[in-house]
Figure 1 (cartoon, helix red, strand yellow):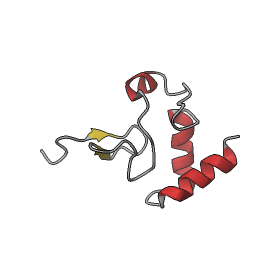
Figure 2: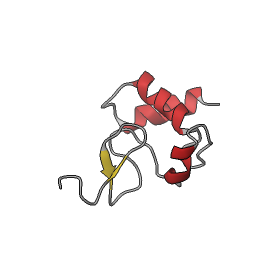
Figure 3: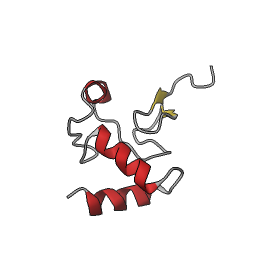
Figure 4: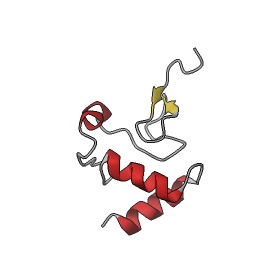
Length: 79
């Protein structure tokens, strides 16, 4: 199918994980996502927050924003 070879991002739901490790849509970096999906409040060392926290960032920053905006928001608000 159209999404063959890609995995669904746990944050934005887009099929963007395939050949890269960072979602091109929302900036989530894969980090043992199979464990984090089962416990979305668990801290992700690659993303410096949990899936639930990152979803909140994604919601607040807005969809289809440049990756740098996500990083800036995360770095300024997740300390």
